[in-house]
Image 1 (cartoon, rainbow, N blue to C red):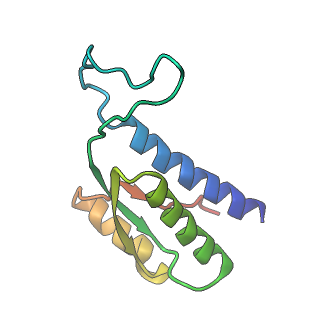
Image 2: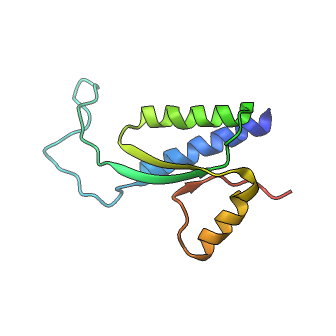
Length: 116
């Protein structure tokens, strides 16, 4: 159970970090402020970002269902981030990652695990 929680937290943190780090070299418009003086957030148009996400949660077990639910929640919470999701069966996942790494065509976000 602890491994599942750790994996979930790492996934959410990674996706959030990537989403928050995009557009870091944009210049700020001095006429627009993201927060109003009373503390309420003002409407802010955000640039649409497209990320590719690969995972191997293709089964119907608890871990796979929970991770897919987390991905769905992330998409609802971040409408400005469009995810190109590819669910790859676990038996060919490592091979496919090695192949795209050799071709320098890695996805933006992908699931990894520590070697045992």
